Amino acid sequence: MSITNYQPLDAPWTQRTVLISGEGKGAWTYARLADSAEALGTRKAVRVRATVDGHETEVTLLPMGDGDHMFPMKATLRASTDTSAGDAVAITITHRD
Image (cartoon, rainbow, N blue to C red; front, side):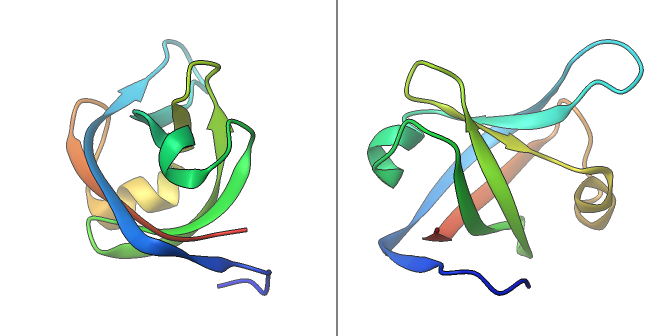
């Protein structure tokens, strides 16, 4: 994990969600985290430390404009969790920057 000023959340925040993928070559695969702005205290982009089906990762959540955030799922993370678009994953956020 990289060195950053992560602060622990008051309590870990978990959401079970389905991975989504855009169409076409190079399209992103991501999870939509419903109501994440309320849980994280921001509607802006925010760097977090999280687990996806038990695999630790650090990622920047991107705001979707409605209080939800996009959790990008890079190919290496999808490979380590053996997931792809349409699969359900459990995402637990423990720290935010």
